[in-house]
Length: 258
Image 1 (cartoon, rainbow, N blue to C red):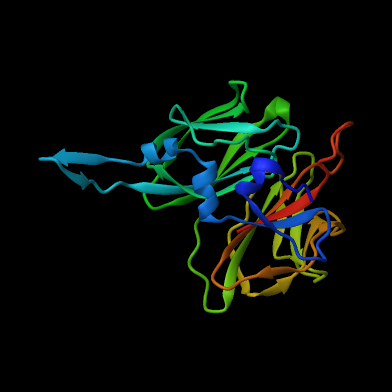
Image 2: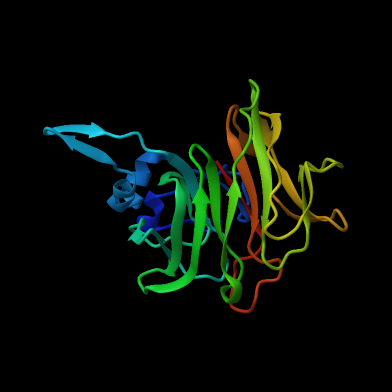
C-alpha cells in the first residue's frame, strides 16, 4: 500500500486490516478532514446571500455532489482548480480521494494542474445537475492524462445490504472481471479501461474481491478480507500498471472508495 505521509495524511484515513496486502486498501473519507484539506475557496463557490435591511437571508442553492480520485499512476501530484479557484491546500497525490464535495450546478470549469507549478494537465468543463452525485477521476498516462466523470446513480440498498460497483482505471490493462473471492461467476464482467459498471446490491459482510482477466478468468490481483458495511456505497477501482514502465513502482492494485 502507498501510505500517505505528512500533511496528506490529514485528508485521507486509510483503514487497513492486519491481513491486507500491499496492493489493496479501503479508503474512508471523514468530513472533519475535508475542512482541513479543501480551502475556503470551495465555501465561496457555494455561498449565495442577500443583504435585506441588514438581515442576512440565505438563498436556496442548487447543489451537485462530486468526489475526486487521482488514478493516473505516472502523473505528478495535482492542484484542482474549479471556476478559477484552487480547492485543495495540499498536493493531491496519486490514489488520493476527496470524498463528496458540494459544487454549484451547471457548467463547471475544472483544471487539474501539476501541484505548485501552474502547469495545466487537464482543462475541461462538465455540466452538473441539481441533486446528482458524480465521481471525477484523473486517469491515464502523462501523455494522455484526462478527466473521467461518472454519474453515481443507484437506489438505496435494502436493509443489511450495500451497493458496490467496479471501475477499471488501469491504463495498460485489458478488460477485467470482478468476482467475490474465488467464486466461479463474476459480479461484473468485461470492463475495459475507463469503463464503470452499474451498482449492484450485495449482503453486508466481510469479502475478498478478485480482479480477473476477462479473456481467461485468471486472477490479476486479489484483496484481503474487507468489511462491507450495510447501507453504504462502494466503488472498487483497479489502478496502476499491469506492466509498470521502468522506474515506476505503481503496479496493479485495488482501492475501495467509500
